[in-house]
Length: 264
Image (cartoon, rainbow, N blue to C red):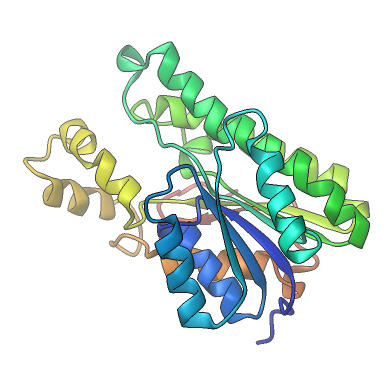
């Protein structure tokens, strides 16, 4: 299936590894031009070189922090300088704050809000004027299942993600008549560095003796009884950003192997 992404100009935040890296790879395979960004310089240049060598496509990388004032503008300006505009934005940069209410400090919640909620807003605010110029745009917000299914262990992430679900739905209505589709992807457990950084806390939460046991218990909560792969998330992101998804907007797609059991 031709996704109609050839020569589209995409920004993927948090694009140096994990889901963001695989999404950038998928866009390049479809002929898009891609800018990846990350907060840390370590791994960013290596990621760009790997993507460039594999695809032969046009890849730009820039170090920037969307949680800081000016970070989003820096990223979008770099994309416009390199490609002449922006058609696609994948908001993937973020934090996952685990732990119950008693351990959630104000600083931790503020980091969550600055990185994800305000970071996503800043990127959208900077990118949308360029999408309006072309009368076409795709925005995909990477959010998380805790926004739909409150979990005391994911207290901070759940509040942040619920706000982002509201943002996604609201903006899909606001931008719809301008040809800009806004959707969300809500991952479950995916085999990334983010999981590994939270594995110790999860093991303690579920009473597991080690990380491997915690992983097995977490996997059993979904219908497929396994973790997702970043590549599987990337395929869905690419589809939502494509011409094939022209009538899909305001959707929050659960990519969790069947973990959430609600009907909606």
